[in-house]
Length: 235
Image 1: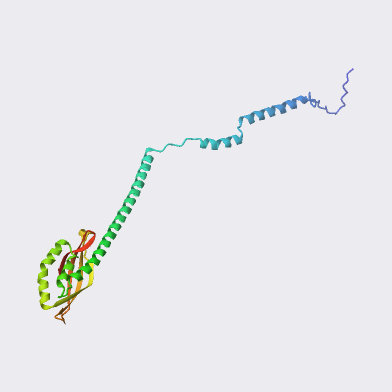
Image 2 (image 1 turned 60 degrees about the vertical axis):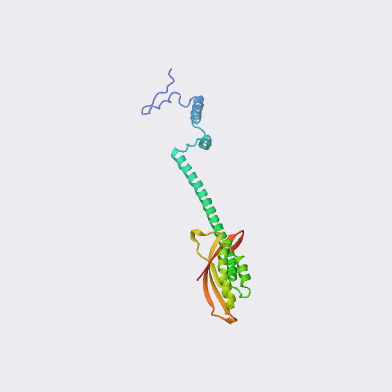
């Protein structure tokens, strides 16, 4: 006897349940989940960690060898070094030259000052005399001269002595101004030429004479450390 219920007229057939519906194997879901996790794990293994990448970058940059300087750059650096050395050497040489020039100029000035002081005294002594002591006065004047000029001076002494004694002439000379002449390339610390302006006051037999003004070119020469008159020209 069939167990199926008779269908009533007008009743729709109920769809039969699909085979296996609602009776799925619980293990299938777990296997699917494990598959997904396995795929994710393999994907993670293929991607390098972010920290590892960033950590290696600086190390790689630091250890990279520097490119060697080109030959042109090396030549330029060498030339710059030579120029710097030459500049320093030139500066030192210029400084030394200036100092030597300053030292030489100061030495010349010192020599001219000493010669001027000696000439001022010598000129007044040579151009002054008293008729009563003229021989001694002229002898004293020769001690202020170089040996060669003293001989020239002594040759004129007899004429001066004779005129002074006969006319009783007394002469007093005063140097008003004296200064070194330009020497140009002939400058020397042992010989100096000077221009002196001299006033002479005369008395003849006790009576004042007419004052005389004259100029004299004096050549001073250093002999054994002492400045002496080597020449005298008056006008």
